[in-house]
Image (cartoon, protein in one colour):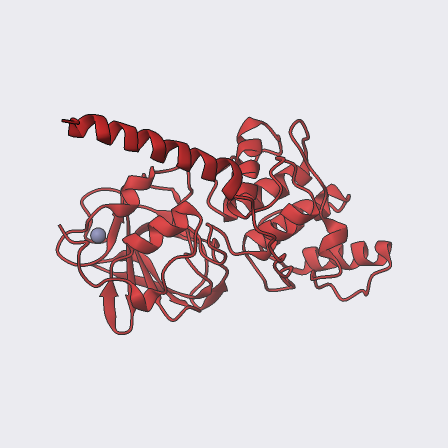
Length: 314
Ligand SMILES: [Zn+2]
């Protein structure tokens, strides 16, 4: 008689070899079309603006990198465009970005590195924006390249820049985690919520809170939610954020995925610092968990309307 366990072990050994073969030979990164460069101009805000400001600084324009595209940034943009012989319109788009970006790699330092760190953080990597391209930035760069199917060399050159800037953040294209990636491990994004579909992320007061998707953010303030945002996403979902300690954008602001909405906290009906997140789509409160796990894993999340309305309460 053949013991079942021996058969199982043999089968597992075969399966392991097959998986190893798949990993070695089967997962060639697909060729990916580069996303469009973002178009930013006076009035724009968010991480792409901050990256552009750092890049303008690296080209010698002494402006603040505050993520707000105002008159000083517009002036620096016009002067940069003039110096390169581009059309002088003060708008940073498909013509200006390729001249503005600077290839950076481990060991580099300065404003161009800070620009790259800002762009990586839009995708949830949670780096210190210190302008020092060290091992943490290199590991974020290779993780991003790998997630996007790009050549994985840890060097932020034109193709990586275009993917960093042209996509919203987080993974899966235009989605971002609601907090910096390094803050919590994957399992927290799958935690059940008390009594109704939502997600509580236990992060300390002052943690940056990001827009999950592009849309229009409206400030919320009431006894239950405390300080929060209702983000009317371009994907048709409403993302509801609660218990913040500070607002980061004005009511009615148009934001990109990964935009810094504010800071987490403990305001409203809350028993300790955390970010409370709801997803409302098709008139129903949905479980954010499958979407957050997909974003964490760098794959496209399910459409909001297909998220379950039960199974995440416990
Ligand atoms: Zn909650």
